[in-house]
Length: 279
Image (cartoon, rainbow, N blue to C red; front, side):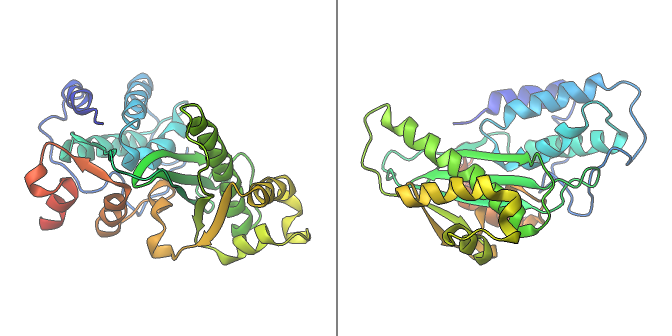
């Protein structure tokens, strides 16, 4: 599933059809805030561009985090924010036909990855929740969203992300029941912090968990009912990291290559990921 026609039309409309492509949609050395750069006199172009890029994330999860970051500044965009939006366009130019691949022979086992971006917003100090869900080998759901409250610790921030992912898994189970798919085994939910798994499996609340007690109850309820099973994954294999932070080209393409993204217009080269690795 791809939006190649829409991507090419967007590049043509913004005069980026002949631009030089880049390997990643965002540089790793910058943190966006409302005070960085000079404010744009006319914010309408920025709003229009971000809105169109947001529509492109339907089949391009690889730009979800960048668009989530830019969407926070629709009311007061600066020249730096506009430059970042243009960088996303240059990244899209590298592979406008990239999209999601859904295998006909994939299993119906649900598995997900949940993580957080600690203190991702320098203005209000909120962290970012990110998750991605797979049905077999096919990516079916993902999210990159700023948390609504400030987390006092990294464990608290990740547990909030875990609770959001648990709700998504439950919703996917309900969705699978509509066409008559029942009896699925517990979904595997991976996170890279053993302390978070320990909180979920510990029935006793203490000072570290008093601020997230509702989330604790929610995750433990899903564990008890057999909806999901928590497993630890190393940070290097945490596929969700692409939804919570920017990456260098090598780590970025290593991650998105595992999200089952393909460019059907370059089958002989094995997709855009391999093209970039050869450059």
